[in-house]
Length: 445
Image (cartoon, rainbow, N blue to C red; front, top):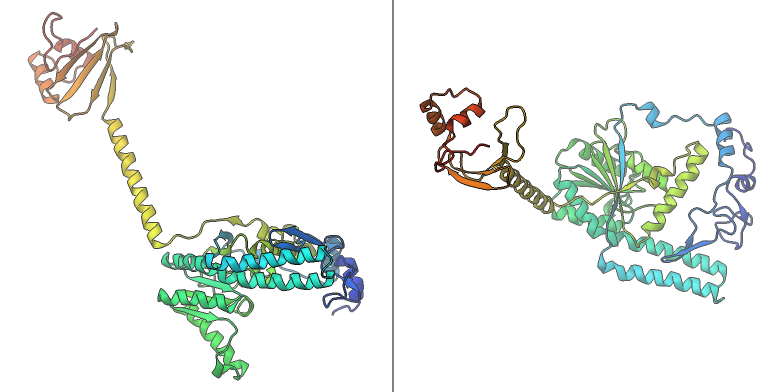
């Protein structure tokens, strides 16, 4: 440290800034009889899946004071948003997916075991220390079962992104999940790279420099080869130290206990060299370990942000909006066809309404009579039906068989001018009241 003892001894620091309380059990996570993980009395939160560590309970205290000490004596911090003004935005989205029905029984079995541990503790059949250990083991088991249960929907989401022409980074934690996703990419014949921290048998005893060369080769392939459309990455093995700015989207199939590693993994693509707005998709399955881990990430980011002076740091995950999964090519084509059909129907309806005109007829240029209405409907330009509604409510209907050419000829025979006002034309063409209506006549008031 730059100033040893500046923040006190470990125990003093824990009591002051980590909300340390006397430990109920002498476990490995305690320090000299104190537990700094959660506040006394916060206990466990009962809910779906048994009793969980309360996410908003303890683990931190006096963060404003800690921030002031760090900033005034030790810390010099520059934020990326203040240094890289031209860096495109990063947009987080929470994509809800459904767990694979084939894995639901295993998840439910773990949930029942959690509830049984709670009942055994309440009934005095196991000690509190044994209950804590059992919960931790079952929570890890629940997390391990959650990943494979998400693979089916995750595969469909990733393939939909690739079909849309998106170059994507795919992060997961468990090797079984990465294996399932890689099988999907191979089925779709998608060129991809994989960095998971695992070495094949021949390379297991190789020097670390050889493994680093393979890691660099995978990064170069993704960055330079346009045919390479995806990168399968381990959150812990590939979340730092590499640049993959050719990606247009980042997908997290699994969450992780440490939100800092998630943010670091996001920034493999959101860094200097990125030219487009980056979308980050978190695939979250309700009714799995994701429910607890997501809230835990919010809480931890709030603690770190409080020490660093970021009051809204917790909202980095808390304000992430929910979005829909990307549709497959077939679903997108079906939606386009439906939209086109709706547009055609709207155009037909608009065309039908435009074929009807309402014209007010009056023998007065100043004050048209609203009772005299002529409706022209259907038919072509030369053939239409003329309906006149008289002021006394009576109607007379006549078939108009002549078009504009016939009308012009009648005007000329009557000695009129085609350019004279329409009202005078109608008066000139009007027959004697006692005579029959011909096919070009109108009735005037």
